[in-house]
Amino acid sequence: MDRRGHTLKFTAVTVFVALALTGFSTSRGHGSRHSGGGGGCSSSGQDHDSSSSSGSTSGGSSGSTYHDYDDDDDVTGGTSGGGSSSTSTTRRDASVELITCATPGEAYATVEVTNPGPAGAYFTVTVDFLDAGSRTVERRSTDEYVGGNDTATVQVALSGPAAAAKADHCDPEPYAPAT
Image (cartoon, rainbow, N blue to C red; front, side, top):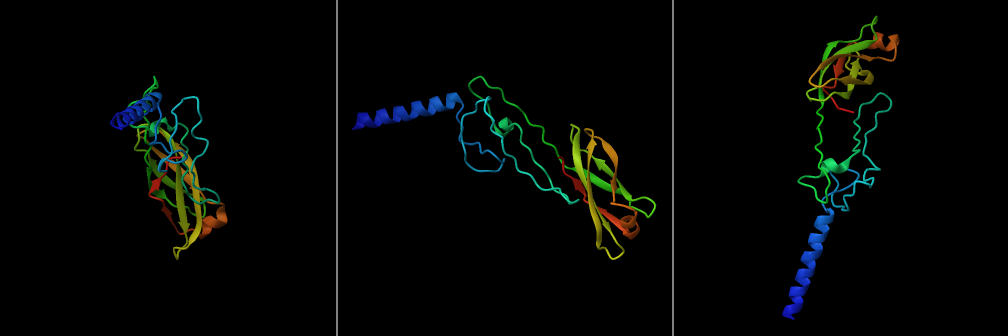
């Protein structure tokens, strides 16, 4: 019996080493960075990301969209089997400051968008246009490109002059998510 136990241990260690050398990983979940479990082979010829999670941005409401086109950035540590590791550049939300609100003659708000990251990106800028009683006239969004470590002036337009005539003040979202 003692010899059989050693043989089983040796076999288990051999299987573990073989799986480790072929790139098998049990720490990668697919479909979301935060999903638990899931494993598989880390072959570069496979399409691991046929799915992505996203928020809705229809009807002028804000939301965020996340597309993970290359899940190799989810791996921490080294690689095996001759693969190469890739480092993902994390994009941070841009900060937004109101410059001017809409007027009956100008049916848009002007905001300043500051990208704190080193790489340029598109950001979804959202502004609430409110009446004198602070009720929402319209909530409008626009996507705008801002260079790395740069600031851009962005106009967020209302649907038309009638909405601009109702708008008394503006309340932009303080942060614009990268799209």
